[in-house]
Amino acid sequence: MVKTVKTPSGGRTIAYETWGDPDAHPVFLLHGTPGSRLGPRLRTFDLHKLGVRLIAYDRPGYGGSDRHERRRVVHAAEDVALIAEKLDLKKYSVVGRSGGAPHALACAARNMGSQVASVAALVSLAPPKPDCDDDSPGDSAVDGLDWLDWHKEMSESNVSTYELLRRHAPDVTELGALLARNAETIRRDPTVFLASLRDEMPSVDRVIVEDAGIRQHLLRNYLSAVGEGEAVDPRAPMGWVDDLVAFRRPWGFDLKDIDGSVPVLLWHGERDIFAPVAHFHWLAKKIPRAKAMLQPSAAHFAALPALPQVLAWARDSADR
Image (tube, rainbow, N blue to C red):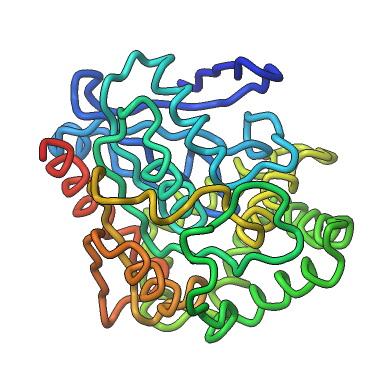
């Protein structure tokens, strides 16, 4: 059942849900982009077998959560900590997949209240190179070091979307219009949106999204993200817009703060085209104390069937 919590400053509403044994180890699962708390997850029966209590929330601007204008990746650590406080959690783990992965790394870096027990980032993007738009603390830990070619081997649709953002920055009107059209497509028929992604996928990803269970989770996830059944919802694409802007601005924390005090797992598929493998190698180099797992024959959506293994790692590493 969906629950909500209000932020102490600004009074934003954050929508979240929990599944599994309330007394089991709590793990936050941070959804992808676009996405919602109803994204792919394990069945309650499987969560009980794993000994995990799963917690998921809608990032600002998605689903039932209010927008947080000009949010940075780092702000996720505050929202997670607020929900943890509401649930009276003393220790918890954080697992982020795809668009949720950078936000999980923020939780590792900030470790608010020293309550973060372990963090896993699956198929994550790397941060951008700092630029003249850096108006708040950024990734000083990597300033002056080598930078990856951020768009190299990335899907054509992702490159064109990020290029649209770059050309018009800081104005997001054009990006918002594009994503509003995508949101309307999802509301009318989410299978059309999934098919557009499938057209770019390597064959190993196509096999995964053709699984009936995973497919159903993805379709429900996309609908919930943009406002299912709403003919006009001006907020619908804004979580999506804000995610993309946040990925391409400095994240607001230093990678050097991920110093080994919190166990961190980086998981990636070598054939990923949505978050190319160069991003994984770059992050593994900059976070040397992280456990890096690269799957040679996997791509982006392989992170979904890998969730049970990763959740078990998060549970076990929390006892370290």
